[in-house]
Image (cartoon, rainbow over all chains, first blue to last red; front, side):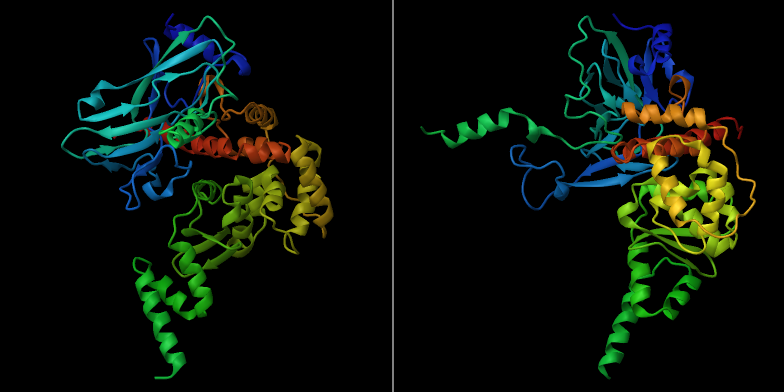
Length: 202
Length: 256
């Protein structure tokens, strides 16, 4: 069941351990029509062309500095996103999703029509705490300015029937306050894939 | 050309290349410093200040007539030039907002020449700031004694217990009867401390940003040291929220 606007407010008024939290909420108008608008944050990870070789998800570490650069752009300033460029941003807001809720992140179509695609791990799991990393790509032919503080996506919350699979404390992405680079290399499947690669011709 | 002249010329060329964009008065002042001191300042100020240091400097030096420039360094240092005041902070501490409040103490001592500037600005945070910034000495000892008189009873938590103990050890001198700002914030500070322990960014009703920076920092200071260290990113986010929300509301109420 999708939560309505009154239900969202009611969830935001609950005790801390059961509270739906989206902070800082700069305007109450962000909660409207059964969804909560989230804004573009001020921290970015720019992905650069690397001279040292391709990204190898099997071998990379978590801070692959050769092909990324961290950048802070304050609200009131802007940064340019060039055609085909990919940048990791984050929501300005920090979230706490109660154990019996999950959310879908939907990019705003008005940005999409300018060529800006806001992708992310579309589903926010029950119990998640942290800002959401956003993958921002310009698919148009014209550079686009990004303005931190603008509404970039909306969250639609759903109730879940089982509350035993809380994300907090289990997931790899718990608690960030800015964008995070891929943690693909931590997936447990890599060990098996490495062994299979070693014994490919057995 | 003697060897030292050659060296001097290399220093001069390097400074010209590095100081582009600096105010003329600052370049002139740098040229009067010894080479190693000048290099230290320039190296620090070629890099952007850490976001926490920048946010705290904006808050705790707000309203000051003199402009300042902030940069990472090896240790605390302050250098008033004719046009602006240069402040270097110890880079390893740059993620700690309580330590960064130490710049208010340094400003009070070396720019304003009056410790009550820091007392009024930081209030209950003064001793936590001095403790985290590793600032002690003759100048601050009587200020800490006065702080103890005003706030010792606050006893908000384990973190402040350590600060009180430290202040008792290093304080001395004549008691100064300042009118310290008695905080109306302990309730908020306690609530924000619970938020930190829960692992969420401190907030007010319905996700609004906290209204008072001091209460957020006091909540952080009241945590046990191991909790405080693990919540510094949440503290940074809260600091950013306080500043941004205040500016947002200010501009939202204006009509162009």
